[in-house]
Length: 81
Image (cartoon, rainbow, N blue to C red):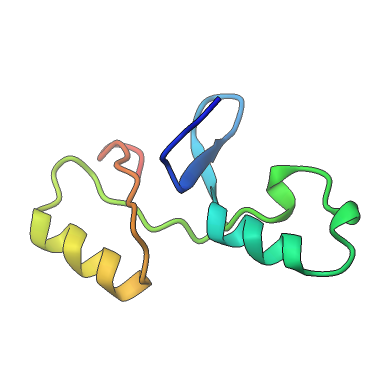
């Protein structure tokens, strides 16, 4: 399967966003020694996920993307950010 995405959400059993797995992080780990010790996505996924809600302005989203130096920004529920 092919995907042009570079970030993948990691969700719990209730489909709540917990972490994010990026191709950048995967590449970084693949270059390190001991990659065989990495068993699951959770081992390299980032817990500090930057998000926006549907109610946030485009200005807010751009500020967050710029500050975090990321390319994609998950949109989560305003009721449960």
